[in-house]
Amino acid sequence: MLATWGVSLILQQLARTIFGAPNVDVKSPDWLNGGIQVAAGFQIPYKRLFILFLVALCMAGVYLLLYRTSYGRRIRAVMQNREMAASLGIPARKVDAYTFALGSGLAGIAGCALALLGSIGPTLGTNYIVDTFMVVVLGGIGRLAGTVAGASIIGMGDTVFEFLTDTTMAKVLIFAVVISFLQWKPKGLFSIHSRALDE
Image (cartoon, rainbow, N blue to C red; front, side):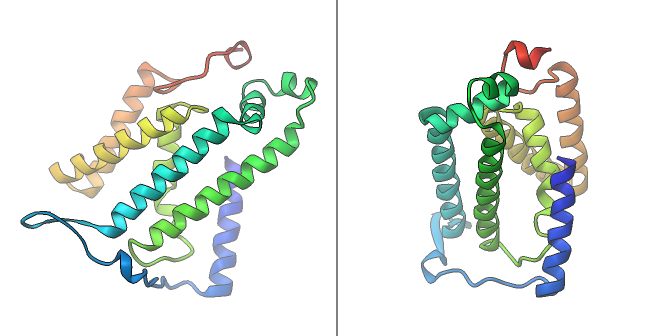
């Protein structure tokens, strides 16, 4: 994770050097303008609905890849017991590279979705990196259901706390809740049980 963080800092500075530091606005397609009027004073923008649809599509794709394909079995095997998977003929280094490429592609899709919500710049992802780590830790490493549950809890909790207090205090309260939960269940909401991981 530290190596990935270092690479992200290098890429951010490279983007600043090539494209400049100021944020820029991205014009969304005309069919994403407007929204559905649910009630008086309450409208659901088409952009948000499109992002929800895109997230559902990506989650379904990742689920099918991980649990319905031979490549997904290789990923899970390498993650749970790297030495055993390698001894059975699975090229662990190649699986690492393909998995990193898949994660980078999903991050690119997330960046495109964020471009619909406001201006974008080289440091756009920095605002979400801490929340992302919290989602992984809270949900449990290696479980797709844990990622969905962790993201839902942190996202909705953050919104509720912001409504009741303010943005800064909401972050503090979310951190406190996550830390307290991890004291009780350090492996997160969902954890993979295997002899290799328990050692």
